[in-house]
Length: 134
Image: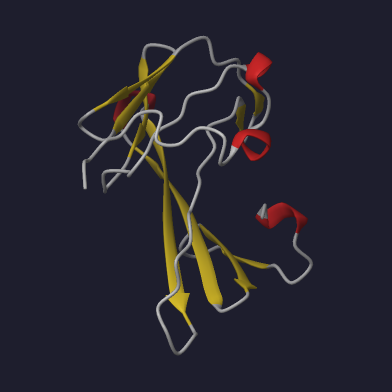
């Protein structure tokens, strides 16, 4: 499921906090994404994204949450020439720190354009790169 294709999605911009909150419900899951921007000295800008998922079912649910790193940013298309995942939960994109995760993902899959979209490949590649062993 791609949130941009859902019909029951809502967004709210808070100008005082400069936050954009996107929310939707999928089956028994209530999902909210909150994005905010922080500007630091020397033109070092950071975009933060927090995801909150609430299970509204009476029993535990099993699901996968996927994040796609694509060559798009708020300003348009920026080519991704190289991407590296570090064990410090960081992605180096085009030789710069691109993403810092607060938790270690269970799995990381890197595809080139010729490999197609991750939604076309999901389930075909089991644990390409395990970041933690169970």
